[in-house]
Length: 272
Length: 250
Image (cartoon, rainbow over all chains, first blue to last red; front, side, top):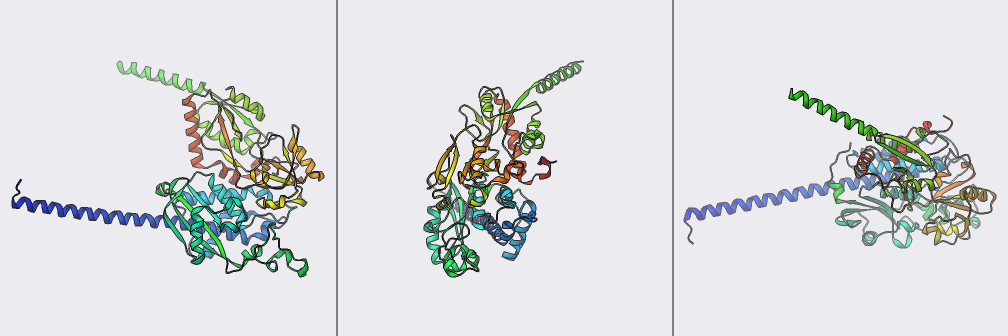
């Protein structure tokens, strides 16, 4: 089969056109994937920071939670959420994120529901320590979210051997991530993970050990139950009933692990 | 002339259809489940009734509510004498439930206040703790695998007995599948105990539907319920409801 010159030129032009179109498509796809990854990181980042702000607020309000009587309205409903927003702004020096994704909406609603479930305990005028501390609140929040069917899983965890609540122990992905993180604590993002057997995005945000962690996890001298007592009467059991681990500010503080099914991220952003 | 005939037929069909839909009736069984559904109060004053009644009414059928004990409710739904039964936290053979649970209950322990253990993941604190468990109730693994001493609470009102024994110091705590049923302000005995929960061990609380319900009706119910849950979940509805409306004093 022979081709004439003008046919050869035409084929060559077609090939060039095809290559150009292919390259343009490739660039478009890579840009779109990049935008999608950024989108995911924003959602994961926002959810993580809202979650951590709620833990900070719970810590700040320990006195109110554990006091007998008084007006405790700021721990419930919309007042609680408003206070988490304020905490977020002061903690991260940035505006509270838009609630433009159903995972953020589910998280905020779950916070209100968890506090409501603790209402009787919080308002119990015959009890002092109620056991609602950042770690237990975070765990209740995680348990509540797991019932929502929104494809979002979030938990505050740490290394296997030092976990207090056995239900909160890390999975194999978290174990692997934390191993590398202890040496170099920085946010780890994985866009090729699995959650409940489904394709998911995962992120692990390490938390630094801060002085208030050591009230329970430090040494007896830092235990508020020992304040004002002579040393021989000190206890190494903290106020939650666990033995203090003797950690210092240089120890690994665990972190927030968050996973979102890809189908959830890809669904429309219809909340505002 | 022809148009007039068609119009008459259409009007007649409409009348028949609307008459038929008004004639349909749903028999709905209610099971006591404080603080969500308290038989000491009128149905309309309880949050779970208010939530479910709202979307059931969208079905445009006549609804008859009947209050039942859990055991009787289970028998009636199995036999198809009630079309819907809620809230239900047990699985019943041969009885379906709507796809999404209404909410989740969390089991726990109730203590005399002086012996209160606030965080139940601290299972080492259960060593030699005498815990009453109502006959037939399955306990969570955290308690089962601990060194707590389990005693059986027999009788029809095992929970009442549990409160009594805890108060008298004969046992240290009693197990409850959903301690909020005891530990809420509407319960006059609420002040006698303090309860904490086994978080992470939640059980689904469902709306059960009769096996005799037609597929068409089941689809309508499922669709109306799904829409209601998308608008607001029951959990969030319960958490943000106007509390003053649901107290017995009002």
